[in-house]
Image (cartoon, rainbow over all chains, first blue to last red; front, side, top):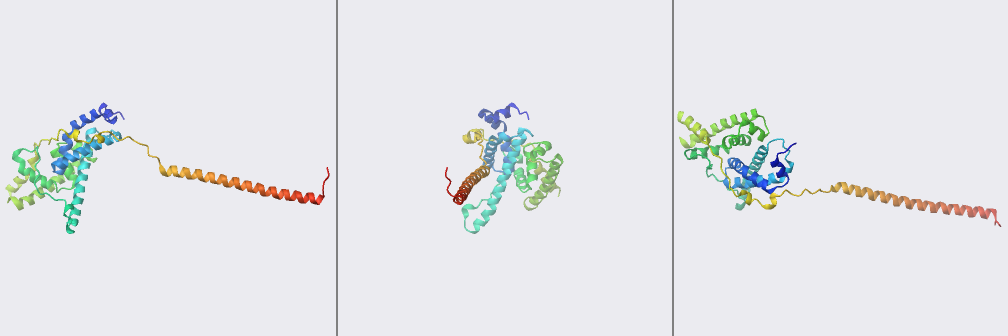
Amino acid sequence: MVFSAEIIKLRAGDEQAFRELVNQYRDRVFNTALGLLQHHENAEDITQEVFVEVFRSIARFRGDCSLSTWIYRITVQKALEHIRKSMRMKRSGVIFSLFGREDQVNVSTDTPFYHPGIQLENKERSAILFKSIALLPVNQRTAFILHKVEGLSHTEIAEIMTVSVSSVESLMVRALRKLRELLSDYYEKNER
Amino acid sequence: MKDKETWIEDTLHSLDGVRRATCNPDIFEEIPAESIHPPIETVQANRPFYWSVAAGIAVLIALNIFGMLYHHRANNHSGNVSSSLSADYLSYLGPIKL
């Protein structure tokens, strides 16, 4: 496998190369994590974790996909791990709250999420949409965020999620169908 | 009904033209320095393997010692037997005068 000069430097532990890598990818990683987590501070923590993981495992990068795809994969993996962890904490929080352990309760915030890159006129509607996105199954949510928020093509998403392009298309169709249902329910309850 | 459908479509399109959110530019500086440098890969000794080799060597040494002791004892025993036999034989023959 022939690696680019950038990867060779990274594998050699060149700090300057790492700095450039962070500068090049930080917004992509952050934006993806933010879309999935819908929480600014958590997305920043995940961004840091992603780069630490990249530093630590660059020696194991086999080059069977682009560096960008590999970094997106780590980002999605870390963000989903975080979601799973907070869901577990939420579940155990319910149990702890029954036994009076209030400190263990993971406070569920129903505060709307406003993505900083949304146009002002779409701010409120996008917050409603993000609330519905959070209810999608993980795969549909990942595909939807990578496509709609990060602006990746179906081919790029297929590489990141290690599935076929047709699977991504199917995930997108199902995600849109589910979102329509969720938004319809929301409309019936709130907008009517 | 039309309002609802329009509202849903507008909401679904509310992400159109979204700009990428920008991260804190100092994020590199905030990463702990020890995390930046890849850990030195240390070759972990395969402990079960080394223990089994050591046990094998110990068994070999024990078998050798046992074998030597057995051999030594057997030699001593056969030496005693042969010396007693020769003594009997000599006493049977009577004293030999050279």
